[in-house]
Image 1 (cartoon, rainbow, N blue to C red):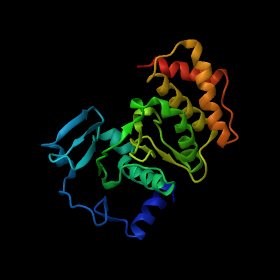
Image 2: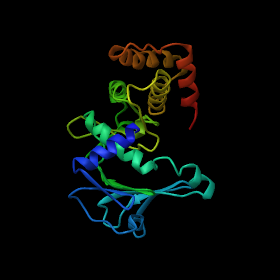
Image 3: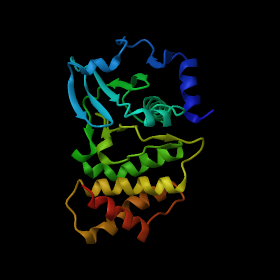
Length: 241
């Protein structure tokens, strides 16, 4: 059984969630309509793209994410894979196991994910001076077998008591052990490039900034990624808007 499957099974076994008719429901929280995506009908839409619709319900109690089916062929290709909503739930549970803040998942059906709404937090683009510390958070995820998939400042926040939190787990992947070296490299590059997008900088400052993040990552692991390949990757990502 995959790591995702193990985590979801354990969540049902310990009573944290129930699983009925393809839907994981957080125990002792809320009741939702048979078609939970209908909560968006009179809610406030935040994003409406070809792949997903997100927003708040009418009374802004929940954050709702509806995944589009995107045609028969794509549906068939994913028929034997865990839906993104299930993977998000498993990743959220792993984050909690690691002591990392993330919005609690209240419902995960095949095409819908509902979480609690964050309040009183600051996302890292609002406080980029804290970004270097996020390298240690990235290490925690990697050593805990979690690939985030889009580890950038827009998806990181600080709680009122200064703890780091993580959102947007759509691209996450769980491993039975620590994540592979290539994944570590790519996610560190994405973190640094997102930091560069949040501050004014000149090209000659990029090596120094990259070295600072790399040293913080290296301090907690044996991985030393600093070098021309990392600089090239960061420069390329930072140039994308």
